[in-house]
Image (cartoon, rainbow, N blue to C red; front, side, top):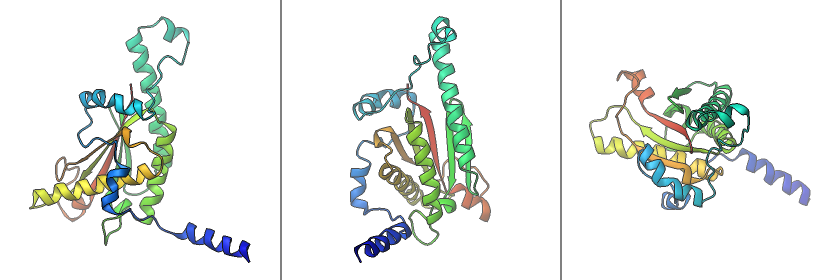
Length: 223
């Protein structure tokens, strides 16, 4: 009887869909996150918090090849960083071949673009079942490539009320941040921002507006 009850509980747990925790608890999940743009200056300022919470810098001295040993240190550090981020990009690209999701390169950084409809429910502001699967994949890869900072930025389509647009975009970014935090991604790696209707990537027609409502996770090497 106990075994049957355990199996039923296990089955129900497997069928349970992710639900964001109450909003008043988000501050605990995002306690060490920075609510600002991820810039070179802000990354330097964040480094003590990041390291103090067990964060790891990208180790550019691990490879003792002759090229690294005798080459210019800055060039070697850049070479290691580029190779690390290229592997990260490839892993994300291979794992996220689904509608509404794209992986792009931005200099030395990698950007995952998640259209809102691909990861959130259409009726309420929360992660969808499909989005849960996508974000679980993202979290798994971010745990593997843990010498990185993350900027989680929310965007909306053009809205008359700019304050409402900012609030909606920040809500989306925070929800994704909370989700990743609950999947063992350290908030000390995170920069979280809501940019409203800034930086549209599509026209403002019916289809383009849905594309402009999105989350962008920009991943940068921690050095």
